[in-house]
Each structure stands twice: as structure tokens, then as C-alpha cells.
Amino acid sequence: DWVDLRDVVTAAVKRTERLARRHAIKVDIAPDTPLLCLDAVLMEQVIFNLLDNACKYAPPGSPVKVWAKRTADHIAIEVADQGPGIPPEDREKVFDMFYRVRAADTQEAGTGLGLAICRGIVEAHGGTIKAEPGLHGAGTCIIIHLPPPPDLDLDGKGNP
Ligand code: ATP
Ligand code: MG
Image 1 (cartoon, rainbow, N blue to C red):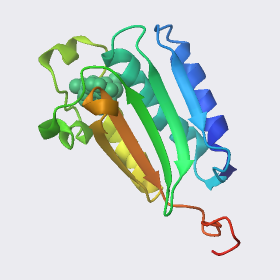
Image 2: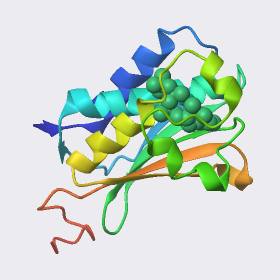
Image 3: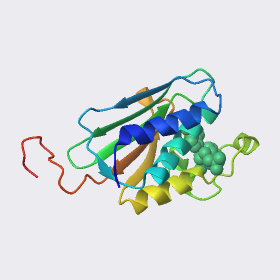
């Protein structure tokens, strides 16, 4: 279906907020973000898994941000927090099944499947997902790149 990312992100944010964790989730979807052909239920699960991680691993009250924009050759969706971050040597492994960074993480509810599921869903849509440090090198930023819709007017001038 052709889906508005705004609806997908809003649904995921509501679901995260229902877990009653004390985080201010900021949403910023660029107005020129095009409709995308994707599975809304699965993509909501992806955004929810990322927000769930941000709220689980970052300190209560710290800001969590999700934003989306179109770039020259894809649609970028990012979820950023100001938590402990993911060490460089673990940034690829966190997408493996059952992998958890800190021994203490196993005391948190969860299975270590969240990010593996995210990668599977994003790749099924032809996209990529990676973990990077957040703003100013602190915290975590998960970056999703989705292919643009086939008829996307990339430069806004009618040129495909
Ligand atoms: P589940 O998602 O299945 O409930 P989980 O959160 O442990 O369990 P993933 O979401 O796959 O599993 O994350 C894997 C590991 O990556 C986590 O256990 C944690 O160590 C690390 N991690 C993921 N997101 C963050 C984050 N935002 N900040 C710090 N560490 C993170
Ligand atoms: Mg998780």
C-alpha cells in the first residue's frame, strides 16, 4: 500500500508511550516526504522496536527523537537517543539474533531479537539499517535508508 510515514511513526510513538516510560519523544517528518509503498504494520513494528530500545536503554526523561526526510537517493528515517550508546565493535553485531551488548542488558525485558527483526523487515523493503553514534558522538542513532518510490521527483523540478 501507499503509506504516509507520518501515520506509521505516529502509531509507533503512541504504542511506545503506552509503555508509560518517561521519555519525551520528538517527531519530525519533513513535509516533502513522499508516500511510500510499504507494509505499514511491519514498518510500524520497526519504528516501535527502535523507540522501545531508546526508551529502555537511555535514562528516564532523556530526549528521544525520530525523524524522516528524503535525501538525494533515498528516504532516511532516524531514531536517536542520548543513552549509553553502542560501542563501535558491536554496531554490526547488535543486528544479530540474541546479541546483547552489556551483560546487564539481559536483566532488561527482551530477547535480543528486536534489531534482527528490524533488519529483516527493512531489507525486505529493499532498504538498509545501521547503528551510529548520536549527535556529538553520544548516545545511539539508528539510521534506516529506504529506496525512494519509483516515480519520485527527486529534485522537485519534475525530473525523475
Ligand atoms: P528485544 O528487542 O528483543 O526486546 P533487546 O532490546 O535486548 O531485546 P535488540 O533490540 O535487538 O534486543 O538490541 C540488541 C542489543 O543492542 C540490546 O540488548 C542492547 O545491548 C543494544 N542496544 C540496542 N539499542 C540500543 C540503544 N538505543 N542504546 C544502547 N544500546 C542499545
Ligand atoms: Mg530491543
